[in-house]
Image 1 (cartoon, rainbow, N blue to C red):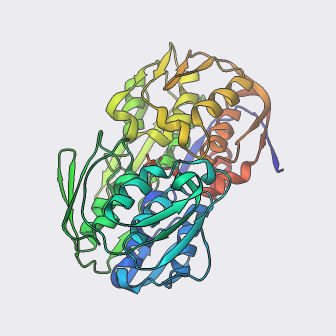
Image 2: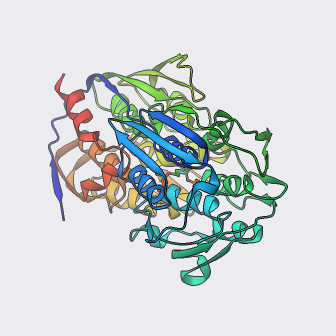
Length: 430
Ligand code: SPQ
């Protein structure tokens, strides 16, 4: 087991970093490049472990993908260009890979077997296997296709009208990808708006998708044509430095190239509400995904309530928001966030357990957390539990602690931010 000693020198953070490519958009760029016709070029691709798993799966499905220096060249031959793999597909730690991949495979007339790591083996798959089976795919797996290993034999699909039981971009995207191959028009209703990268990418690849409030409509049989994809920086990665910038005293940092898709910016809204001093400079990058630079400074924060429709727009940022809230004046309440229980770890339990070890006044609730604020954090031994976002949150927590923090399983961080510690050390060294 790897252990990393994080020295707490309470050093301010200054200078600037360029935020690495967005994980959600990087995954989708590989998938769309693979099912489109022609040569897709992707720039600023994120070579994190999860996105590399996606590349590996599509190579096993017969797609030519070249990867060099954050740039991909993908030769797609349409959905029909995918072929039956003679090996098991391994999605590693990536929920996005397995759920979206199943949507694509649902319409392919061949057999595929899919596995993932220990964490994936505990994450619910019925949320996608149910609607895909309704459309006509033959799916089996552990506990009636609830968990991996999963096998799927695709074929002719029929469109469905489907109300998502949870606000999930992965489930929505999986059904959209199946819907593109189905007979008729698939209609999906979202209980709350979730990230819309799939919808934006469909349009970039020359097909049509209609969004009317919370209804999404997509017709089957459309042709996708290869396109250029420039991946903006990942706001979910920037989140760790946004929180460090406002909480570590004497800090002032610039985060460059942050994706600013409004379905992902809930944390910025919450930070403003908490009194954070941050400035956003959005620029026209000519892409279908907006981006900009963010300047953030140490600020006096106050507690807040985070609940309802904003939750899906900051779901992956909740661990680091919880840490930020330990430093605010007054309590912060997070509600309606039960989805956290089925992420790489149960992120309500892991956040509460690990922050309590460092002296935070934080409690788990049925569907979120209660964070009392004004906590003086001390050193201690903590673990990422193999969850990248918990690992990064704890590395930032170490900056706020009196005393050393030893972090177990820091290697999980490479799932979404392989150069996280290089960036952190750069901001500490200026
Ligand atoms: O891919 P994975 O493992 O599910 O990754 C996570 C993360 O923290 O990076 C969730 F654990 O992000 C999901 C996110 O929570 C990525 C995602 C997407 O790209 O569509 C959507 C969200 O999940 P969901 O279940 O709400 O659709």
